[in-house]
Length: 462
Image (cartoon, rainbow, N blue to C red):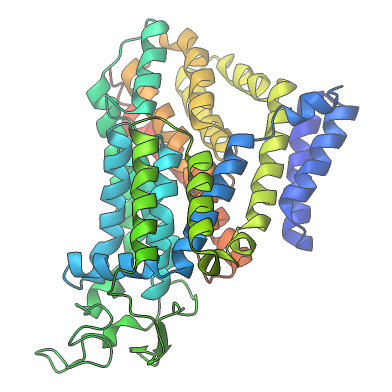
């Protein structure tokens, strides 16, 4: 049995054991990386640790630390209140606002994980407050980021278009952008319908906490209290959760008398909002690392208001950090020993171009669910050159299909974006949410590559 095949089978065993024995998959993956690296791939410790995602570790710790402080001092509650006012109480619009916001950030040049790191904690805090499915909100954030991710001035767009130019393939920047935008918009619409979006519309408008007609306030013209639609089924079976300032009783959002005022800006909240703006500017304008910047800002806030941040370090999603870093370290071992290249070259040697195309799309989706989307596109597009040169498959459609397949799966909890969503969700059963993200990511991996192949490759775009 070849070393590459052994490494793939070990990965399958890791998944099975983690699922059936409730062992942290990251810890299993570290053990697998050690065993396969030493015994099969002949790698030393340095070679094994080469795949450790140090940058993602810092991003996960830094962002969750900063937003734990924001939750402690009520800043996220204030942002949720402001968002409800922005859409005039239409809670159903908030997931689409988050979709558009992350899409706009990536379209103007933000790296997709940076945009998700900025938006996801706010979006998931809103989901907790108004009993919206965290899977719905998290998916809308990630798909929004990918919807704008291939604009001609975006990071992904410039990288892929550069690869196409280097390989001397026909390219179309606008077609690539619109393909990703449309694909993610359609998926977001399906997710919205399946995971409780229609029930959010049925709630009608709610008033922000503490305002007339809100929780416990006067009813609107149809005789219902504007706060009354907030409770109810989220469409996922998740029990409604309430933030520190609210409690869900029946179908009404009840504000506790001792709850902090979420409508007022305190000095700590002003400083935290300033820190969040500084994070956006540092990442988007000055191209600074999102994780290191977030940790630095969190330390400054902790120093100024230690009482608000005393418990923040304990609220960092350490189990998620272990899970993601362990799995990605094992994927790094696969890359070091050539397993990914071995699989891609095996597909490219198939004599049927359309079959090779769909298999490359699936390889891109499966690998990207655990590793760098840009990295896998950089590997697969050159592998597609030989059968693209035969002229039987349009280069523009093939590149677009590969790009969509390799990025739409970033909802996986093992990808950077999915991990950020998992870490950002407050007051949820993380194991249950992890399984939801994993199942949803698996469905996306199974369905989307075939669909984009049928729509973009079979008709022969370009």
